[in-house]
Image 1: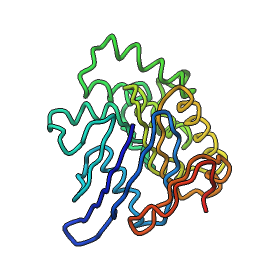
Image 2 (image 1 turned 180 degrees about the horizontal axis):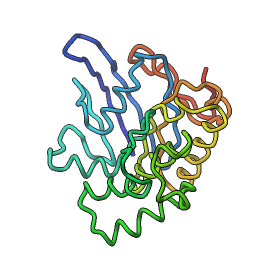
Image 3 (image 1 turned 90 degrees about the vertical axis):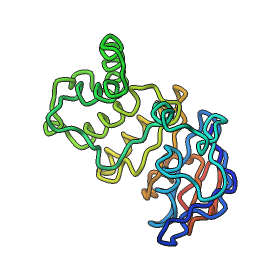
Image 4 (image 1 turned 30 degrees about the vertical axis):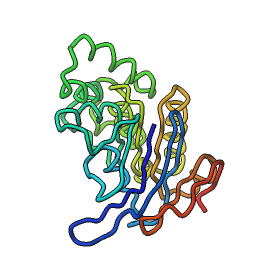
Length: 225
């Protein structure tokens, strides 16, 4: 599903963000990506959605070398690989339904598809009864579930969660993780970048630890440290 082969990434200012990274994440895996600030987690995520290209080495999604991807094919990649962010990025003047539908509309989905996919996805994340609410009327956990619904509505095969619980209290964070576990059980590969050691220790899933651009640990059924 996801393969990084001898990947290095050096930015124009000379910062070496990833250094000779070799990694495979199979289909349907649930992986925690951990490490201190500056370890290379954000660069790793940007490579997966082709916001960045490696300085050397190769990144593959479903056997496709992302460096060889034509510009016109990048939107198709981003249907396959969706990202959830820490700060939700909801549109305040659109309802829950409209926020989730927007992800389809900008990708050219037909109205009939929007009317089918959005309610199905809101039901999956437990927000079917909040479709007409605006973001300011939702709790932090509910806003995060809208963001997850928006990422899921295009039925991606890979879901990358970039510190999705960073602005949530511990109970709400745990509920968010359990939702992602359910989504993973339905067949979606999950890559979960986090600093939340308690969540990682509770879940006991595969942990990939980055430090200074290197993978310093890749361990199944593991905790944060």
